[in-house]
Amino acid sequence: MKKNVLVITGSPRAGGNSDLLADAFIEGAQSAGHIVMKWKAAEKNVGGCHACETCFSTGKACSFDDDFNELAPLLAKADVLVLATPVYWFSFPAQIKAAIDKLYSFYIGQRPLKIKESLLLTCAEMDDMSVFEGVKYTYEHIVNFLQWSDRGCLAVPAVQKVGDVIATTALHKARALGNEL
Ligand SMILES: Cc1cc2nc3c(=O)[nH]c(=O)nc-3n(C[C@H](O)[C@H](O)[C@H](O)COP(=O)(O)O)c2cc1C
Image (cartoon, rainbow, N blue to C red; front, side, top):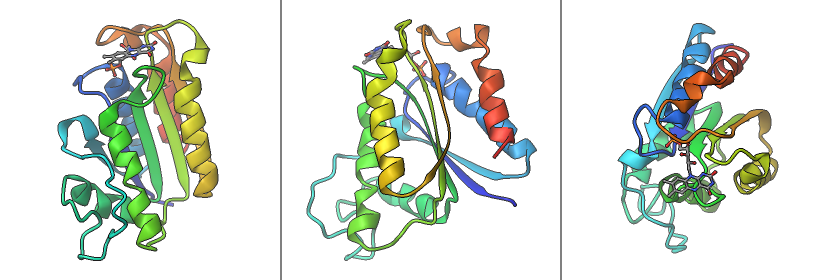
């Protein structure tokens, strides 16, 4: 079955490690016939959620009318959501976290998402899998709360400079995850 796949990236580095993971995943998903949209949170302007709880009441997902309102229709039509992000301070970079926070609008606005499946592609400089605990914890709780099915979590340690991920087996794994969707 052809799926609408939305990939949200978190790094400001074009061609960086998580961006390459995202592209490898996308290549795999497209070769399996899926329709993929890539949305680069770090190139957008999404502010923090104001908790005004007026979501969708003005006709827009977010009343503060930032770039989340461009993301909202993509979220609404997605069957699969992929978060592709580096670890920043043991957590998500602010730009992608702001977009994640505003998923709240679909909850408050009572517009259930049709997303059923999700994946996490992530990377970090430290050569220690515990560095991913924060990002994985948040991802897994969101998946459980929204009753999505986790289709994979690829965490790549020990990559720092742009392109370090190329010397690992991770791009191959990301491509396979996309292809298996
Ligand atoms: C602001 C900032 C915070 C970071 N925090 C961490 C961290 O807590 N742990 C870690 O291992 N790497 C940390 N890193 C390194 C990145 O996770 C690492 O370089 C990663 O490969 C970057 O991914 P990218 O190429 O997709 O941007 C940090 C980098 C930046 C710029």
